[in-house]
Image (tube, rainbow, N blue to C red; front, top):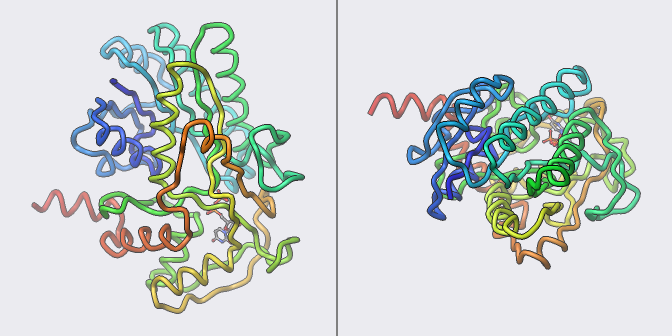
Length: 335
Ligand code: UDP
């Protein structure tokens, strides 16, 4: 198949591009590089720098290629930032997705996999969270993804565009071959920040609140390896030949922020200085997925289900690329 990957230069997107290429698909990456990295895109993929807000660019993109399906990652994706700037999140994420889906409908492209999120579920009453749990986003980021899921629902009803909405819990880890990993600027995610503190690149890690109603008072999250997410996208693509679907993707096991720090100390063998800070607005205390449905229906089986292998692969990436893709691009240019 020929697959369009929006946001394919980003963290989860770039790992999915690698998985698609390994499976023998042709891949076209469309990314504005505001958060993504050119060096994160495997050279076998065609790369086009562009923005989903630019409808003319989208028309040109779809006129020049015959896509069999779209994987849509490109979005603003930070919970904290979305609480400070809700309207930019709601506007950009939803309008860009709308532009994409309209371009798909015009070009007759009938399959899309959406990078959705556990943030849809707000502060859920029942843990683990199954697909039919009540949707009540706790922050504008989650709300924007829910609006896109609804948009896709109507694209299916009215135009027969099939969609797979994959609600990731906390993506973590890095490609085991050491060439791809997490590199945000500024970095806000827990595991890369903890590893930077271990490496002495940051003075400490700040824990956002220890007064939650959890066993050790810090937030509990379900971490899922980025390559396992990529596998789920490939399975979802196959099922779109028959029907639309939505799945929660996690490991069904939560780890507190403190447990993440302890695991990172074990994996790195280094002491990680911790400071206690205030709660981060928009953070629910516990998010743990039930992924029984995708396991039963599509046979999804995580290859890296334990936090240790996520932290180990992330650490390996960090050690090989202390400056992230900036360093990778410089090394490439020097060759
Ligand atoms: N967190 C923290 N300190 C940090 C960054 C994150 O305590 O410097 C906590 C955050 O409050 C959340 C968890 O770590 O409970 C995971 O946060 P992250 O930003 O990695 O992912 P999110 O849950 O927002 O998708």
